[in-house]
Image (cartoon, rainbow, N blue to C red; front, side, top):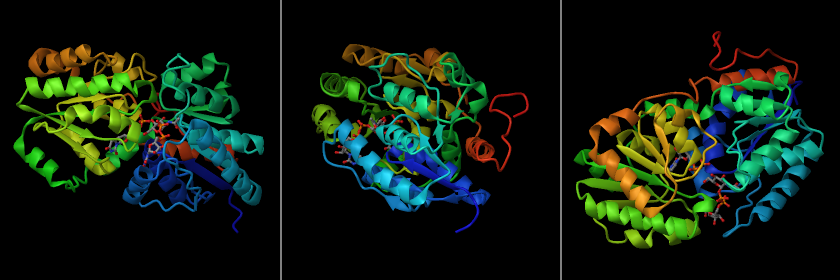
Length: 386
Ligand code: UD1
Ligand code: UDP
């Protein structure tokens, strides 16, 4: 055992794995800490796919995923598994990311054991406790118990200050999703599905779609499926690409409307490098994902967000992201406008980087080092000195 403090990054879903990967790598490279990487396995296949790409081999795997798992099931299995680990290993700090149930369970379990909680991607707020559900509540709970709040942007920092978080406990790092995106952007991985290589070679306009949000499951998601089928029929020259989330509830809602349509391709979740290549090839992005709202603007892709609110207002303000809700007719109208009005398209297709500059992991590790008394923070992302 070394004299270095033990830090424990905890994650469990695809988006957390993508956003934690640059941070875990930076922790290890810094040689400032001992590191025990813990995954809950809230997602199984989609988590493993990311870890494999980034070469992250978890030290502990709680393997909690169950078919049709409930929020309380995920919460309790995570807390139970972590509590034993914390008792045995006594970490100096735990690191959680975002607003999933893995993340909040990790924060509560650590807080109850008196372990400082580092919250990565802190301060995002939709200001509606029911939407996204339960993520808005999850991130607010984590903010209550965190010792160090790593806000991606100055707006997320301001949200925390408004909630009376001590400004001294906040650092603005940028979002590590941009670190992850930049790290795979140059690789130009071949698609493992030959249909996608064919699509890439065809030069067709691509509408890239992802959906999974709990609030949209059921009737709203069925409407999304119908809207896509109508768009496919009205625009035979475009191609719709839908990498389907593994959640069976999502698949049952959206896929029936798309069966047998020639210009629609449904795939398994794409490995991250392949997904970012698909993003770069696409013309329009239609999504309810949080991460995709952050990535697509930096590639200059217009994003239509199938939600009524967002905790990521920066790219909306920059004009690249538009909130359109889930009404079937509205989806058809908004996509059609982008496909048919080149001036309107150009007004949204701006490459903007409000979420990061690729150095979030370096700032994160410096802030954790300061928290543990072995280093000094770097200037905030977006500050004149950064
Ligand atoms: C969760 C997160 C959400 C995040 C999303 C990312 C919470 C409360 N929600 O969504 O914030 O945006 O993940 O995708 O933590 N499944 C598999 N294999 C996988 C992944 C999922 O089979 O690799 C299936 C399982 O049957 C599981 C279901 O999908 O029961 C839903 O997964 P879950 O993590 O519970 O999804 P959400 O809570 O909707
Ligand atoms: N993503 C991926 N493969 C896919 C679809 C998405 O790697 O087939 C990535 C995407 O680039 C983004 C992340 O998954 O970084 C978003 O995950 P998701 O939409 O599941 O969760 P959210 O961001 O909404 O929490």
